[in-house]
Length: 88
Image (cartoon, rainbow, N blue to C red; front, side, top):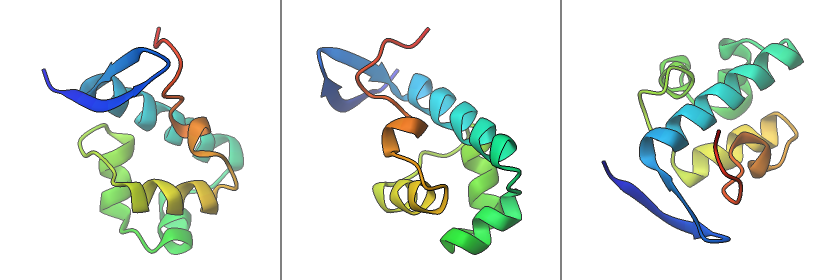
């Protein structure tokens, strides 16, 4: 299994863990904000299929996509994935 190069506070997150966490958090944030994948697509310029891949943990978003999503949802990047926490 691949490991992300990002290592903050001594914690290393696997790619699978990263995808799981990001997808779950994005899905939850969209639900809580009552924003559809189509709405997020319109807000970010990302395609609906790309957003679906992120939510379904099938594609790793790049930094630009993460920043667009965080800006659109008016949240911090760490709200989507907290790189310094242990994943349970």
